[in-house]
Image 1 (cartoon, rainbow, N blue to C red):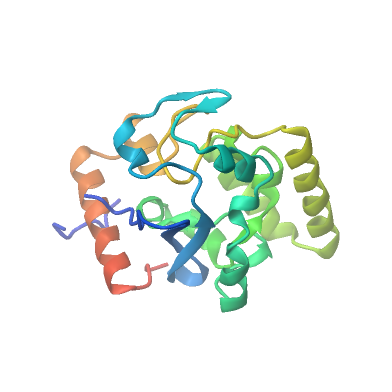
Image 2: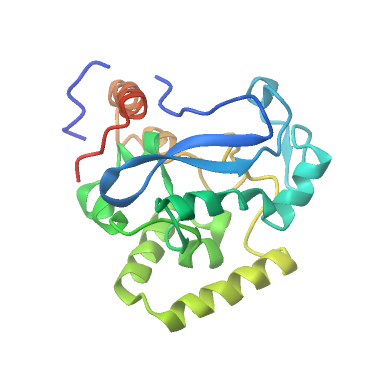
Length: 219
């Protein structure tokens, strides 16, 4: 993208210690906020490699597997809702390192508060391609209603208890490649050569600055 003009690599900020996993995400109008989840992986999991199979990840703790299966790991996000950074239903909050690379028409879809669950999360979740996720987020934004929210809630409950539409080893704590494409949008763009390695590195450095300074992204 043309706006990556500053010469600013690790744009994804997380806090490695404790039972709570914390990470910076994007909420309304590009505001950076910190999301909370229960930690489900062993300490220093990112240094242990991927070690992922469809139904097993050796880095995930036994209690972590239970929390992921029933999405209880996202319970601390109630705190994010009380702070006003999230709602119960909406698009999933995007990583800063990914949002840096969104085109304006995609960014414009994310002026609403993100949610614990949403249309894309209920209808596909980790099985969605990036393009499908953007289209489903767009559909929700254009058709938001109480009835649609009710459908999403029941669909989410059904997905959790039937184990459909999601791989339980997929995690927002690491970059596993189990689904149809990379977990991170930036990595996907680099692989399909829509951005160069130089743009990729600049984007990661820019996201570090946004996270550190708690700045808003320009929409």
